[in-house]
Image 1: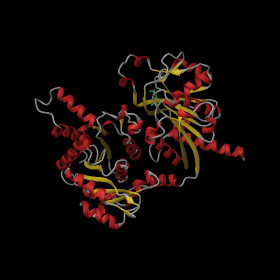
Image 2 (image 1 turned 135 degrees about the vertical axis):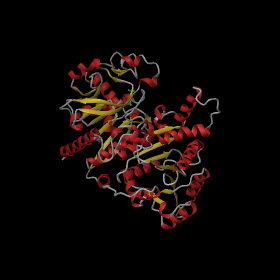
Image 3 (image 1 turned 45 degrees about the horizontal axis):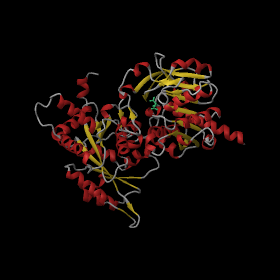
Image 4 (image 1 turned 180 degrees about the vertical axis):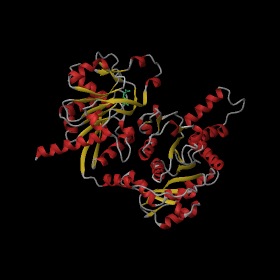
Length: 548
Ligand code: GLN
């Protein structure tokens, strides 16, 4: 497309979303939900996250710090909120959709070192704020709406440059071109038997101290807000009453767009931005939510990993299960199992009541032997198995040791001197000394072998999935694996990388080097998760028939 034409196609409108009172209120879900509502009214919309931390990206952070690292098609390691945006919007975002304070400062300091500021003193205002504004406007002209979620809570010291930049940005764009939404919390105080609006009033006041006046206030609460509470918030926080939207607790996050549209959030946004109101189509979404809330069947799945104490570490996997569950009309009871607790003698106790197990991604040696024990157990007992990235690598190690007789086979990530390096770095990678440079990140093609379970799941030969790993299956051992009953069901187009494996003598045993969970979207799901749940359902059915 001619970029000039693209640039002038839309007069882009901006919707800023701030957070008040406390973190973890679900600002990302609110942003994603508003995005979906606008999209379902036939608008072109994208969502951006501004993160006030100094890390350049979350790639180097432990999952316990900031939850899962979400990888986009273009290989950016981003905040997990981008996962929500993609799951709701159902299209791929990229590195421009996530800006961190680290990136902003990095750019400005690099320019300073290059002498680009021509002798000036480099300051937060205007240099840092200008760089933030530049990053906010990258989608100018390409979308009708850009929703910008500002991470953190109003009042945090580190988000100040972001608040100042958005304030300036909105003024520069003029009225009707940018609006501000704040998401706050309205707690229920048991002893008083009342919902309290004071924390919201304080947050709004704090936002206004930075020169930002909210147009809409979304209130998270346990229950619906009464008319009185809404009027009080409206009066004390300077917004009209219809612009106080309540967002009470719901069963599933996928209900949030439905609740927000009932309160007319999208229509209010459109009115404030002077855009005519198209019809809203939420039929498919409603059916999807209905199947989540009223499923016909049930399966029990175990997720074996080492970050199980913090569910956000596996965010996309958990969501992919919800999507696949809805598509299979099945409720998924998920048990998170700490791999460090597992060994060959206790797997029966932990795993025998499950209808499928997924061994998840991860880095480092801790918990590996437990994962290998779990895989041995499900392989021998023909329980459906799904291995993702490290989970697939562990399946290769287990198969090498226990089926192929390659004693102590290992990944060189865990044992550099292993005789059977069934998982290893590629030769080219070994030459690179900077660890960051050796990671395979982002979307890569994979050719799926016809006649396999993997092909059955995807229904096509050429697929694209996202990666985030350093190590690969060592093709030196491919013949041995195949002779012993493993199928290389997915390869890179040049045949040099093994991307998917499965077992001949097993109802559903699949390992993948990529992360299919990152492309699972609400309503449509991800093929392998859908196939895995189907296999778990069959397993459960057969088990109960055998018991009758
Ligand atoms: N640690 C493994 C590697 O680097 C697997 C990574 C992952 O599971 N994402 O290859």
